[in-house]
Length: 304
Image (cartoon, rainbow, N blue to C red; front, side, top):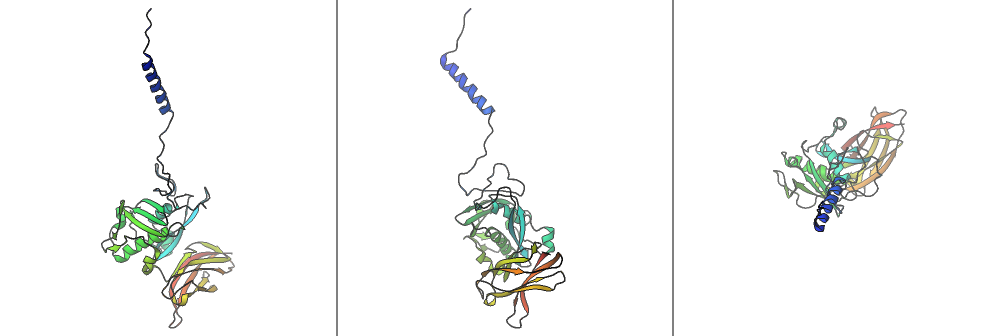
């Protein structure tokens, strides 16, 4: 019997093909990832879309894995900005998650508290990147649809305020469908330079309350924080019970005022006999006659 053998080089080629085929059968493709912290993120409250990063550069390293995070979204209260609190799953892309919450619009409860939005309902987030204190947010074309000067200014302010709540973000650049925006809307609002909260003073209330936010439960001592631009930097804050009676009151002094916005951070002690819905009311006393002006009311759950 004649035994036929393959040339040595053909045997080696066949062996290599078999090894490669076996290796591919036992592996799954890897999702591309970036080695930098400035990658695009599309975190949703429930999951991260396949193939997209879970880090947009906004994390500070203080997030506890698995523990929900509280973030603020900045909605509208009349023709000014107002804050609301949302709970989101733990994520390193906290800025992206907060913007997604903002784009979802106000909840029914928030609407009942007088909050709203001027961001078109079908606006989608394409991505957020954060680098050296600047967030670049990329939104879908619907964000630029319709509206006059006030509406366009307010929707820009909602995004700028929501992003700049985070310590890693000081300013915001806008993109729409991936294209940098220099002139926004039919009214031609110039936004080619990084936007800050100072650019939206006209739509910021004289007394902006950032904590507590509507519907939150408070007990014993309520910490009140935010910014103000009032005469001589002084205004008043009251805790009122369900019947509207003032049960605690404090004079608040911001870091600056009378044309310059300053920050404030005070704690107001109070007691109630039973848990009830009440409110925090902040206002400036008119220099003319002492009557309340620039009034903001935040509904709160007062607990024993």
